[in-house]
Amino acid sequence: MFLFGDKKSMTMLMTKRLILRPITTDDDQFMLTLLNEPSFIEHIADRGVRTLAQAKNYIKEHLLTMSKGNGFTLFVATIKDTGQTIGFCGLLQREYFDSPDIGFAFLQSHCQCGYGYEVALAVLNYEIKRADLPKILAMTSVDNLASMALLKKLGFAFVKQANIAGYASESKIFQYLA
Image 1 (tube, rainbow, N blue to C red):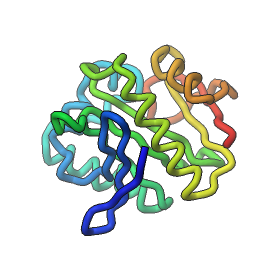
Image 2: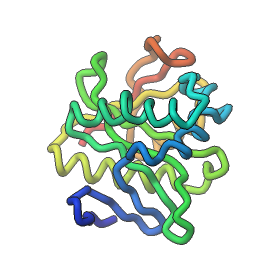
Image 3: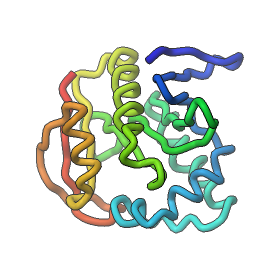
Image 4: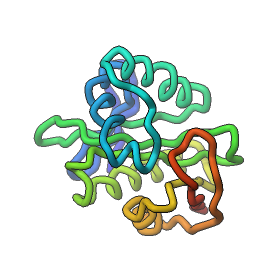
């Protein structure tokens, strides 16, 4: 992985197969598709986003607001060879956690390809160094076996199970110590 930036000094990361750039409201079509995938609704929540305008607003009011307020960046992952946007990953600071947590979601058609690990590892390495983070949390629904396997592969350890408002089901909380 290496870090680079464009003319506007936006932080971008690159892995072997992917470019990670900060999410913008121009990612509305991708976000509309992602938020309406059955796996997103089942394992995260139905955000009620059904139009491009709602997707643009969701990015602006939720994703960009959360990242601007805490100094973290949500990165959109695109495949180098095709330019196709396949997912996003980044750290968030939620009011109910004492440490930032990593969040990620990918289009179902690009799951089980190793992209999640590649992106999450790049984001973890970048944010741990940049923000000198001693601990990062993660949460996933109790039945999301793929996300739990990814978190374990990244070095996260299970901490507890909890109900968190705004999410589809009970969640498992994981912790990564840097």
